[in-house]
Image 1: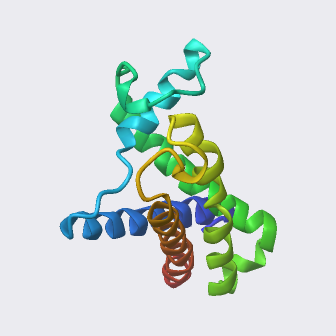
Image 2: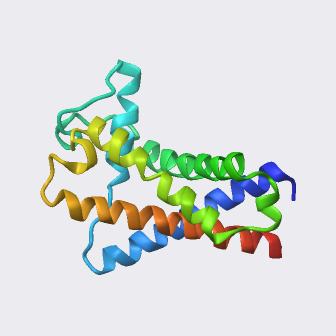
Image 3: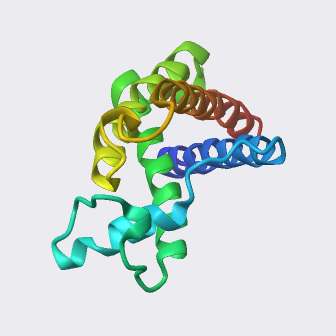
Length: 159
């Protein structure tokens, strides 16, 4: 399998593992981000709107759920490329859990300091109830994604 395809496959696999984690949390009645709102945010880019007071109160955009899920997977793939950019292509042959977890941890900066403020939730969910709980949940979610990078790389190497 060529390097590009490996990186994409690892990103998709890690994102699937993250989705499985969120599904299990949902069974325990722990809610995660609705990707519809990510799609609504991105769908408004064409109108020059990048910030919302509260994305949940913004008007829906066509295909927002599809846009949100597509963005979710594209971001997961992008972060797998980040791992290889930071740690080198040799990581693909000899995956390191600590490197994968590090990328997972570092990428939590994106939702806490870019996405949540843009959705109107404040920096690190400061405009929402229980921001500390939400921050910890984001960190754990990104650590699960990082673990998914590692597990997906192991699986890709077995194929």
